[in-house]
Length: 178
Image 1 (cartoon, rainbow, N blue to C red):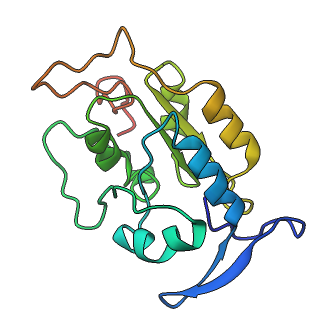
Image 2: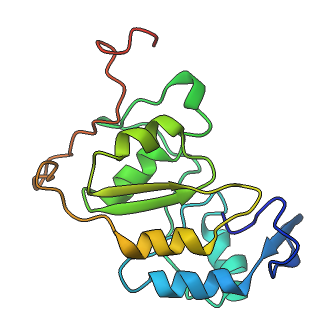
């Protein structure tokens, strides 16, 4: 979402060679993320993992942020199932839910499975915001995040010591296509 594939020529991106990749970054994204740091607890939810703090954060003018670990993640009891067709795009879902640990959260990415986005619409405690991989994060995404941040839900409260159930999980009884 911060490294678009084909941004509009009028946008202000600079090319950087990082870890053998050509990465397009905009200082504007750093400004927007610092703006979001008021109502949100920011973290890196990227396959760059800790390398995001080493290589991306300084270029964006960000402090080191907590990192959601995806590499080597092993399915754990209580993790939601991911459909076969979503194995790649949905690989971040269980680690993100574990990281959130029942707290309200927003997930902004270019690989969120549409089913998860649809199912999250009924939840006030999460906001899944898909981003076009060609354009990356845009101002309207930031405005949406600021306008209605996720909030604790009266209906989906995690109890201490109890992992909350996830209605976006596939229920084999209701989904015979699995």
